[in-house]
Length: 290
Image (cartoon, rainbow, N blue to C red; front, side, top):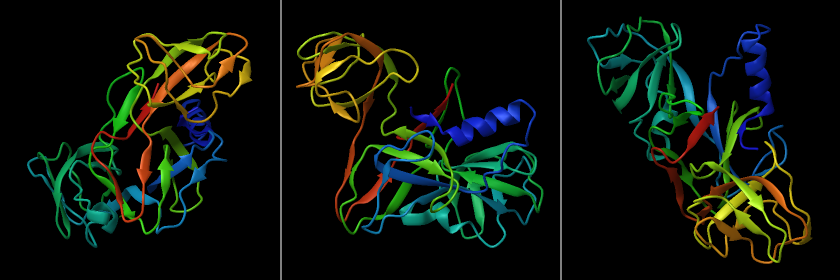
């Protein structure tokens, strides 16, 4: 199910049980899928053709001047990385961490050729020669789950052919191939507990779901529940909501011959036709960790 990949989960567990040093992620890249990958990092259909390429969403830079806690300006050797302003991005809303000390420095207001201006004075002293990490995501917040939300615009190159209907995204540690770090469906919606009746069609009950007819959703039993038996159709892949009431809905033509239970989640499908720049604004992509 969406969330941490097996690669990330195993690395995190090996780290917190004292077996390894947490693997370094110097650069991260955002990928788009028309069918979702598996937690194992296999399967799924990543967009191809039409000038599509993953975009960088995090990476390091080295400072060439000391930034004190009375200054919002961070000076970068060799210039601000090009990916920060790729495809019309401004860098506003991105975060800066002092990787040398592991301390959060601040949120970007604007960038110049060799300087980054934070929205407030740096929260920590960054010494000349320190490595800082820049990320499109804001500081993680909350609990059960904690979340990291897109802090600024993440923009792909303009499509030169249709990219299809994007249903999910992935975060990788390489511009091509690499390890899948995290994936999730498009749209920051919660998983809801649900039961399924035996009937024609089978009725899904999810209290106060808030769905409307025509919405897209997915059904999962990965964290508990039992899929119903199907006499026609199934609940795999991205499905379309029909027959909505306050607490129930169904999938047209999907009949069930036994009851079931699991989780449902709304999905926002992003159609990307030719000559479109796929851009994701602040807060439109959320990464969560329980």
